[in-house]
Length: 108
Image (cartoon, rainbow, N blue to C red):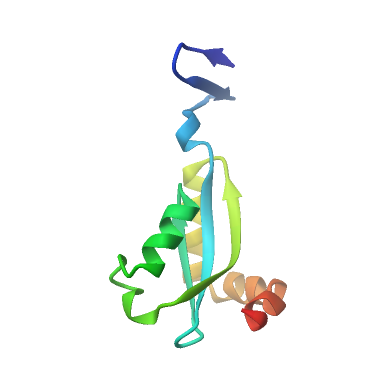
């Protein structure tokens, strides 16, 4: 770990990770309006959830309000985006996730 005056720079293997890029989230929202799920990725989960709730996202604006039913955290942005891609494109990954968190989805 290398310290500078204003930031902490973290080195993991060959990767340099800035503090504000340390965690990336894949998240699942459930629309209370149509009961469908939305999958997304972000570096700031609280901000992104608020954007969805406030109608600042064109693709979800008409489906408000939402409940956050699930999220996964990743250190590497590429891993988070790969997970999001798999959940959106591969029915088996999506089905497995729904099976895992089914009670969370149903109760939301």
